[in-house]
Image 1 (cartoon, rainbow, N blue to C red):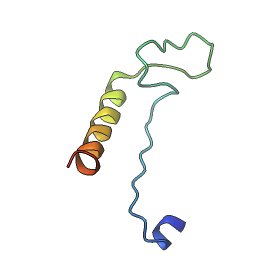
Image 2 (cartoon, rainbow, N blue to C red):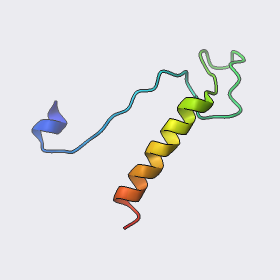
Image 3 (tube, one colour):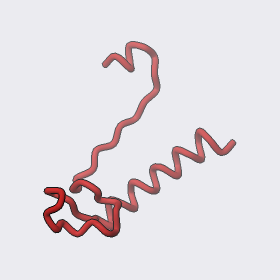
Length: 59
């Protein structure tokens, strides 16, 4: 709410995935509870990241 009130254009994404979902070595072995690689969500996150970079950094 405060970002909107301040005129800040912001986008937030939440992923239905476990901690470290983009880490291909995360195997849910118990070192960190709920850690598990998720290829589908990792791809979505990378696509969003690269789209953000293309729009805001690579001009």
